[in-house]
Image (tube, rainbow, N blue to C red):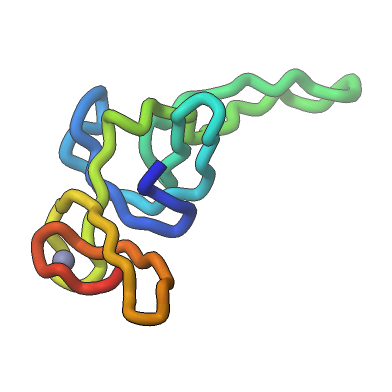
Length: 102
Ligand SMILES: [Zn+2]
């Protein structure tokens, strides 16, 4: 997967289409990501004790990685992520638009 935790992404599909957010979790096995403040669902938490009220907790649900696109922190454009091998043999990610290392 080309996207990693902390990356900014743009939502391409679903109820939050067009929004941008930060990746807070990457689930490599499922090809899913969790984006901060996006794809929010409400979970009802039952009261643990008597007299306590149940709570509604909002949480971002995992979404398919194909529904998000990387946003370059340098040029702020949604871009494809490319790779480049540096002279020292290190592999780095580059922005498909401005070709800066990201
Ligand atoms: Zn860029």
